[in-house]
Image 1 (cartoon, rainbow, N blue to C red):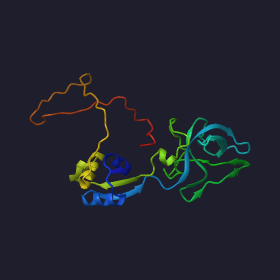
Image 2 (cartoon, helix red, strand yellow):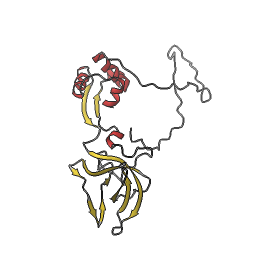
Image 3 (cartoon, rainbow, N blue to C red):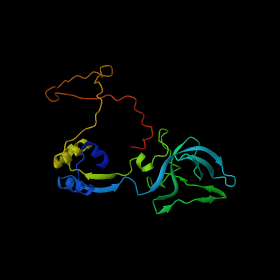
Image 4 (cartoon, rainbow, N blue to C red):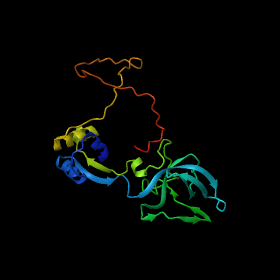
Length: 234
């Protein structure tokens, strides 16, 4: 089971390092298989908004974009992605940024047009192995905010190999309880509004063998669209 250390610390936050946390879990019988960064190191990347997109005057496959990066001025950036369009919120590596692979962003001229940064794909940020185009962000993404901060990428992913007798830790609540006990710290679960348990309009449940099944619980889920794209924060 994989979980986010930052998410765990929303439930219980002992004054210990990641390494100490991993050691505690392993000694408690929750063997840690791997600890990985949520994203590779990079800096100088912010949330930007594409204001305009025009065809490059000397290259069919390039676009010249005016991008708001939150500095009060727009930056001209040449982009080769097919999906770039005006109005998009995108990750922008400004001049001076460092990307995975020790790639530095510099002021450049592409086919005679000056480019002051780079509009990034998920692969260029090390968030995916391949990308079809630039990474499109939700429309409510705040322009100018650091991209790592926006997606909470300064986090560690911990992979725990659970044995059959530790099914109580198949969810984050169980992991949090374990960490709370080990450190004598209180566990604060996020507040969740309860949904009324009314399914009479959907089905009727009758217990025909109450001795074998004294209680039956179920939940009806409505409005589920399996085709919806997973949010970036998730």
